[in-house]
Length: 194
Image 1 (cartoon, rainbow, N blue to C red):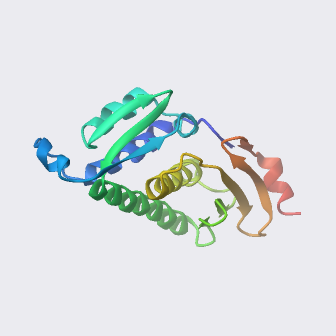
Image 2: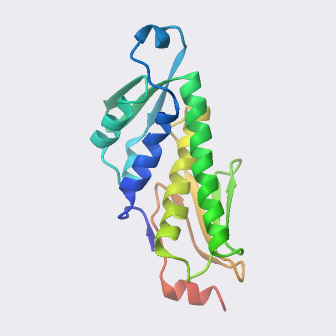
């Protein structure tokens, strides 16, 4: 498994942008003029990591966010405070759903998001379903980063990602995104049992 571009990037993009849907869209521009708005910049590096198309994301977001722009490969969402809070809540619900599904698949599986140190630890084993693994690694990472951007406005999304063997606690692979690509294969799993 390589954490970088994968075939489910479109799924993450849909999850990333569909969060805007939780805010009721209005055709009355005066409603949005009365509310303060802020910009959330989704950097090109995050879109690249999620393997998403900026045009598709922009088009989807236009239906639900106050304003959407593209600049230098970045996607800029203009959101009201209510939209921002709704996005954070929806993203967290989606993260919680993945955590729930992981624990349902195996009670030893876990995801620990350490906000203070910008670290996410995934614990599972080599028997994990491929789609669940992708949802854990790609979706949780992307949604967690997106929530941090919504809360603090920073486009710096460095995350140390650690994959651990849930049986031994040994590290299978680790690295810091977006600079590094985290790759591991069956030999890494085997080494984590030694």
